[in-house]
Amino acid sequence: MLNEQFNTYLIDSELQDGSVSWQSPSNIALVKYWGKKDGQIPANTSVSFTLNNCKTITELSFSKKENNNQFSFEIFLDYEAKPEFSPKIETFFKRIESYVPFLKDYHFIIKTENTFPHSSGIASSASGMSALALCVMSIEKLHHPDMPEDYFNKKASFLARLGSGSACRSIEGDLVVWGTHPEIEGSSDLFGVKFPYAVHQNFKNYNDTILLVDKGEKQVSSTVGHNLMHNHPFALKRFDQAQENITKIKSVLQSGDLEEFIKIVESEALTLHAMMMTSLPYFILMKPNTLQIINKIWEFRTKTKLPVCFTLDAGANVHVLYPEACTDQVLEFIKTELVAYCQNGHYICDKIGFGAKKL
Ligand code: DP6
Image (cartoon, rainbow, N blue to C red):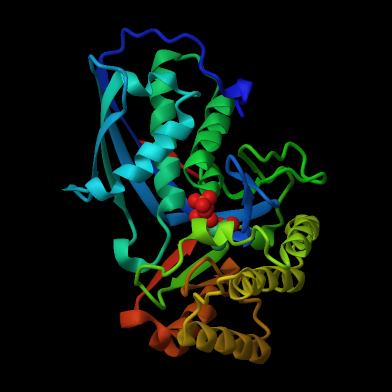
């Protein structure tokens, strides 16, 4: 399915070589994307906080080549050649080729690094694919210097989505919606859009401390997990629930109702994992320490009445979410009571961020 708004018009092929660089953040979904249709179309709408510190930095160098029948690239992570990433990049290039037809005209060197440890169990596909998509867009912009910023961002998100669904939510900040929803103006299945309404002060500088419970490779990839939503007995109900949660969180983000925010976000996290546990084949990505941390957070919240909550992505790590106003108390709680459940005591302090930056 071609989306004509993102076709590239004729390119001036004078451009011989050069290099472009971007840094792009990770994001954490509040209402989760889990389940998709062909062409990386989400089964439901999702919304995420863009992060600030967990990011990928990518430099894309290009030089004109003779033979333009195939893609040609080399990829380095932290200065080390990573030929094992090639199939992923090849798939990405194939998916986006019709929108950026100059890809086969150049040889590319992709140099990438993450600000978070590679083996942290933090998914790098959102930050990695969005950084690469932005670099590709920067090359397109070199051919078309007058490209409007709005189109640039939209198409970067569109291309990033074709690399990894959640990557389309990493271009901008601080809150991004992906997936058509009747109550979110401008929302689309094809790209992420900045949450288009005023966000309450309570959510400004919101913290996300990521507790690294298990830094190992996941046993089941997100892509496999998404596919298990086909023929899943609860899928349709789940997709409806997500749409309803978007309606609810839309008003919560505007009103600043933290109690309601917590209910939606924690329920979304547990529902995501409930979908995994009820797939066929079923699987569990949480670890015993994931549950220990969740229980500790609930105890702490009951005792202190502080609006701290958790969310999970497709892994065992716990994202602890809390407003700026209670940073000191929650950090103290994390250090004294939660660090013991983290692998090697590791955690990452992050907060809501404002999107990718050109370097
Ligand atoms: C649980 O975006 O990694 O983090 O589109 O197959 O690359 P692909 O999947 P991916 O899935 C992310 C799933 C999630 C929830 C979310 O980020 O919304």
